[in-house]
Structure formats: C-alpha cells, structure tokens
Length: 255
Figure (cartoon, one colour):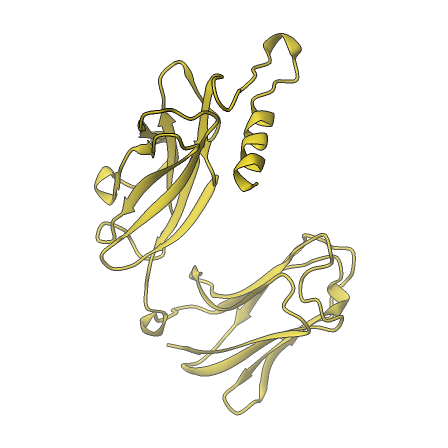
C-alpha cells in the first residue's frame, strides 16, 4: 500500500496542467522519473563523521540493477569537496525503491556554522528528475564545554493564542530571575525575541507554560521557543515545539 501511494504522488508530479505538455508515467513500461523521498535532511555531525542513507524512488522498475550519478549544486553549498563523499543512486532489480549514501566528514567543519549541501541526480536524457535534496548540518559540540560570552535570548514563535503563554527562568534555589507573558491573541506565526537575559555561571531552570494545555499548537499553527546564546544562536539551552501540554521544563547549566 505504501509504495502504491508513493507512486501515485509521483504520477501527480509528472502530470502537467497544460494538456499539450502532459506526461504519463506508467509504473511498468512508461517514461522513468526518479527523485529523492525527502527534500531536506538535517544532521548533526559527530567526531569521525556520519554516513546518511537517503531513500530514492523511481516510477519504473527494471530487470537489472540501475545506478545514477549525483551532482553537487555548487551555488548552494558552503563546504568543500573534502568535507563529504558521495556514492551513486542504486536501484536493485525489480524495485521502485533505491538509496544513495552520503558521508559528511567532521574535521573540516567549523563549530557553530550551519552547512548546506544540495544534491541533484545526474540522469540521462530519457530519465526525468523531479526533486533535489538539501543536507543541512552542524558539527557536534559539547554544550557543557561551551562558554557563552554574551547575554542570552528567548525566541518565541507563537500559535494563535499568545494569551495562553507565560514563561519563567529560575536559578538553582527556585528564585524567579526572568518571566514573561501572557501575550496577545491572533498573532499566529508571530515571532518575539526577548533580549538581555544575563546569567552568571551556574545552573538554572526554564519553564514555558500554556494555560489551555496544548503547548504551542492551536490546531493549525505549530509554534516553538528556544533559549539560546545571543552570540551563537545555534547553541540552545531550552526549547520546545508544538503540543507539549500545559508546560515544558528544562534544567540546564551555563559557563
């Protein structure tokens, strides 16, 4: 059933609105179309690197194994060729499902830099390619060894009911150092950035509350929050997304 649904979606992608330019993809004998199952893949790269196996789908099958090369979009990457290695897209005989292995190396990456690698399938003229894949990745770091040299920021992306949301940041004794909310309703997708949160070296607790009990999800919009180091916003100490109930609490230590 799953592969049937996937092939139906692929067929829809290849049916143009203009009847004079429409293309029909027969799963058994029609024109071949191939593409990645995911458009974005997010990775955290550990020491030693990581190999990601990417699913790829084809509208047709073949009695023989099939391979296709992949190419890097040089305009949409900030890494060098030594930072990664690419395999080939491989489809086993009689299968609509293939894979591509992509290895991301650790040593050449820089801490706290978001990296992007966009890949396309390099297919012959009689094969149509209907999607690319973007790898978005960071080199792993030990947050316990990171020293934040600036204040902290709280970034909130609201659902439609900000009046349900409050938060507080307490020290190890339970004393409230910072708090906020409730906020205004109707700001679905609105972002608030709370600056100038100063924390001395030590341990703390951050709790985000929702009085309705559905977190940052109003049935349509999924919100989130993130407490980060202002100087390196990829360094997160407390975060939550979507429906986390009536509250979400995180204990953390800094510097």
